[in-house]
Image (cartoon, rainbow, N blue to C red; front, side, top):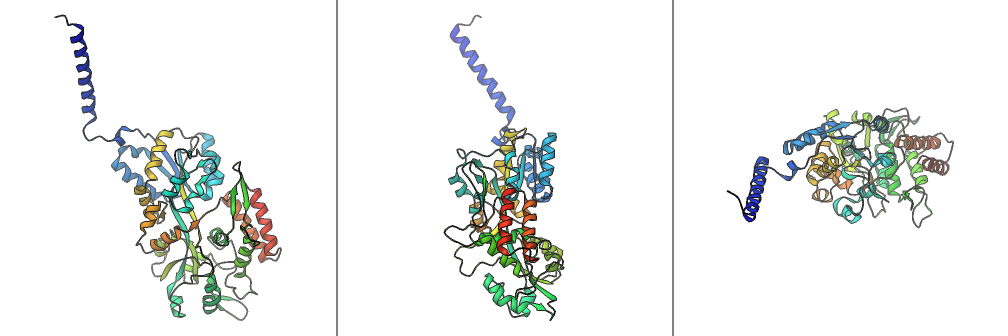
Length: 433
């Protein structure tokens, strides 16, 4: 039978609808948007512990099987830059990196920033704690903030209690004027029998960079800023509307604890590393990161210690400490930018970043999660410290550490006074960018 044009059109339309229905049925009623969006293989390299990220990615693959193609590789922070550069040169680099702001300057030119048109500064401030804005540079957001590891103070409860002290000092003035004179144990020849606080030297202070950075931040230093062209301007010695030199005052205060002629003398270069001494109950106060609490507990289950925020100045109206802000960045060389972008969105969500924080013993960068707080033994203090933590755009970290180490030794060896050592360090840091 010959169909008229109108009848033929109806057949074609209904046939098309039937074909579309068959396609929808083949997808299945349980399908979701996540199943439709193809992620593909995505490689992440970072300095957050392997076990934490492996667990997170496994959990995500249970929700969306495509995350089975997402891999994570932990790289030692001291080896990260060289490993990344060599891999990119060979064409075998990752799609994403998950590192702290301490690596931002040296990896910046390899990162594809997120335009402020799609993620504004207002959005950043609404979504993350204040210190996370360090990733927002002049030309875009260089990482989606994930977690924070703030510098805190661990203290030996037994030793303080034996000397009638029930709480850790909350201010530097209380530490040097009350706690230290009570706790210090030296022989007549200035031999240290009981170390109180590990400050003054660099090589045997595990987190010397963080301690000096904390003192600088607390002193109001402008640290390092960006000029109109995105270049780095070193202002370690500058405080707005003040003649104070924060770097000079920082190194002067820091080195008093290693000067035998100073009443604060409680540390020297002949002693073992501060963390090992704290674990053996031969150091009373240890400045470490919030993520170290569980590690310390595992290394010495018999050590009776607690956690507190690092001391502040007695007259300070704003609390500050140093922190490591970990962010997820997309590399220019990524072969799968779309898939990597999907992974970035998932891992930076409050749901997943909170899980990363929990598994790595850190603090989520999410403003809402930090505001909710934590009841964990160490988490409550870490959350509080993270909300006032700040970082700075140091040049290549190992170079900065060498400069700070030389600055400390110059003062300790009387090669320079604090002002001269600070000026020299500031110039050398400026040259390192």
